[in-house]
Amino acid sequence: MTKKQVHKMVKIMGLYAITDPQLISDKHLFRSVEFAILGGAKVVQYRNKLASQVQQYEQAEQLSYLCQQHQVTFIINDDPLLAKSVKAAGVHLGQDDGKIADARQLLGEQGIIGVSCYNRIEKAISAMEQGADYIAFGRFFPSKTKPAAVQAEDNLLEQARQQLSIPIVAIGGINLNNASQLIKHGADAIAVIHSLFHEPQEIYNTAKAYQALFNNSGSESNEIKGSE
Image 1: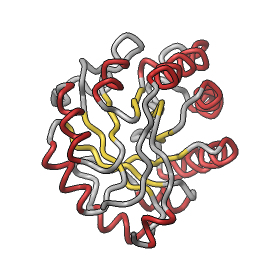
Image 2: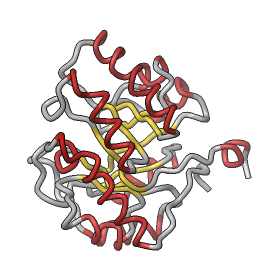
Image 3: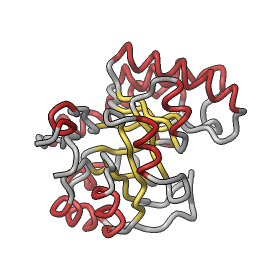
Image 4: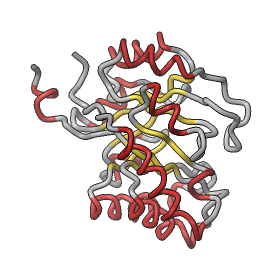
């Protein structure tokens, strides 16, 4: 076992909340994320492609502090440099967001790197071999956030479960009515945007209901220990 495998034990599991500036106003961002965390979110990803760099830094810094206080994993979307600047746990990379090796060099061995693999198991295997710490598949259902995203099928999760030794995140059109089937098929975490944040008064209760799906599943999630 390598040094990386010994010391890297951060979990990607349960409710994975992703922020969206079209659903959450700047004024309510901190409080909305706090409600999600109090309800049970285990991972928070900051995603705001509309804000200026200064505003992104200010918001990400506040959320990084919040997540540290609650011992929740904080991930930055697309931007390894911002992740390093605000001392986030890591970064999530999409198809056009740079190389895993470059993010690793910037964030170090302890930084968490997630990679979107859409509906491609071969991309997920390659990402794991390059040092990704978790992968995300989807969309699994019609998505309000990314309606044109490629379709992934439930059996992809089962296939990935057999071939990957890192956590698997499911994303895309997920709600409380369909999340259970993805957990059943092998998702370690469920990434949710619209279903969680579209009703500000219900964020806490919705997060609690999502996390209950994992508590009732009886399944244990993978730990990040590096590729074996």
